[in-house]
Image (cartoon, rainbow, N blue to C red; front, side, top):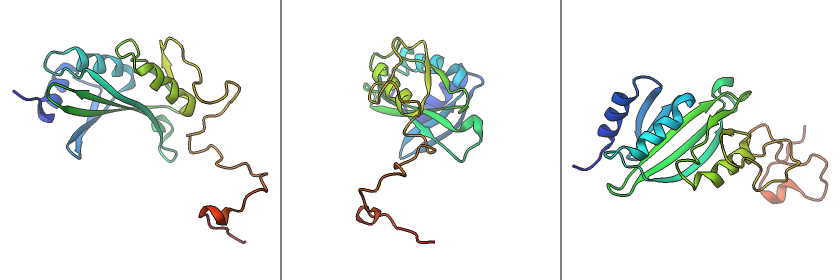
Length: 173
């Protein structure tokens, strides 16, 4: 029997009584939220359960919802793929921007190592138990996280460029 989104949802709800919510389909892909305290267990279950068999972690990335309440401003998004049934899912876990910590899944998927480091580097999300959580693309001395919405896009002191040439509107007050 081919794996479908209803089966995945039912099995997850059966196995994890609490901590999962907002199940919905987006372009045919099942998307749901998981509480950060059980995210590692859910991903491990999806990988190791013989019926689920999500054996490939396609991506780990971050999102900053600047206008959201403080406890939901940062989000880690996991995309997983079951190659056998060709099914993909999206898992979201929200974090408090003042304490953005979630368990690493690098012990389950080696590819998560680089992806989690990149997410840490750009969003400041800390992946607990990561074997080498340090900046991967930005300078080690950098104190801010450039993909957060509160990061300044430009150096206000720059005089060597004219915003009009880059499609930006110049407002004269």
